[in-house]
Image 1: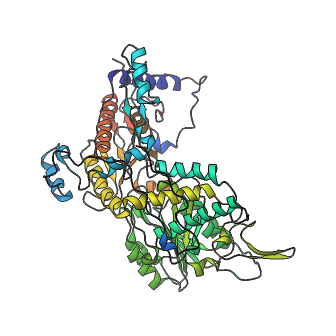
Image 2: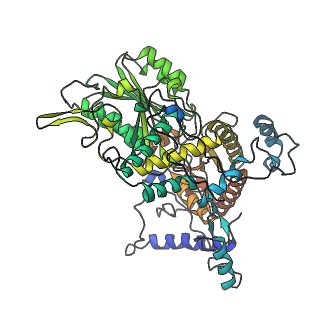
Image 3: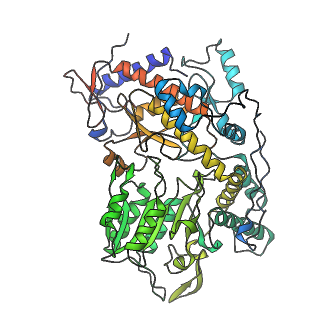
Length: 592
């Protein structure tokens, strides 16, 4: 994949137009407000020379043990094992790493231990067949043929490469959904649409059965002790807010609830997603508790575990909330060691919350083995629908917490002078829950179980290492996070010395490559690392070696293009911004 000359010319014209218009105070472009000065770019003005299986959403009963959760939905596509090289053993990461130092094309002969996983499931995700015409519009393959015929073979007016495929590398933001999940949603609305827990009629019974069956599947998936430990939420953000609000609001209800109060300490890290920072800031403000944090650094590839164990935990620490896997760095944190240290040194009744958004979809997460009190995760990152997530919590802890919201379902008895509340999970699921979404999440868990979470994890570890090593070879790219050879999640954030991440993401999109650009909801972490933004490529089990190779090819072409624009410029070492050597003081922001 490469950027065409015509596409280069268009981009140069756009950049030149932006330069020209910025000098005029009587004209403004319809674009968002510019970013802070630290992230602005200063550039020299360029001189222009398969068919899915039918989901079974009634495969289990919530009256039965949660361990009976169904996992019978296998991937439906298949790939022939005859690739002509089955007799050759795939090189290990260590052997390939050494070869990369002696050959710039080591990756061409690289083989995965499980080369057929991604190819066997791609047909289950219709969106992955998306293609683009020469103008960058999404289209079907058949319409591309018609467009090229109508245009006399030109493939559109943009002058670009026609029939480009989608290369989706943004699964850390949200994963795609297999057909079995979307079919489950349609099946619910077409065959049993009704509210749960409230009706004696057949539709309500069927809907309640399917909804509670999904709870069983989640409980089994994370190895919960009891189904009552699983609470459905709109996502991980609401799950964290649920815990933070419940522990910091003094709601009477005729009894005392477990609370964080003045003089107590809440401990988080500087590497957290904003959803695991802001709710605790709000909780500390409400209660007078002290919010402390473990600093992050590039040396530690995330937050500094030694600092956490060097005095930040004490007998006033009442809650610790940390991430399992970094959504920016891909670092897999040593949760077992951290939990042991906290239990030994914090308050005897300390609570530990684990943000598992980037781990539950990709590896086996056993809530009992982890030894924490809460785990939160998002359904949309694990092939499930949007608008659904879950909180797992120890049942005794949940039943000692105040309700999060009031309304129907969460009550025991209501009187005009007060109310009593149901036990978990009903206590925290006021109102009509996300019924269809929960059923869809259950179908997603069935699908993942059909592949095998251990198989997914092993494949992604290898895929992530391959991505890391390919990026290591790209000129002008600095990869953030663990070094080559250190086990990491299948994602890499990186910065370039020639282009702002926002511009990079936009130009890669012209080639059909979808990555994420920005601070990834981790502004404190980026500041600690010395960057305002980064670009991120994140993978899932449906990504292939070819996805990585085509991405790197497009990345190299895009960086080469921007490098040609910035010839004769220097790079600000502090912010990584491009600064022209001329005396032109006109401020420039990222092109897009």
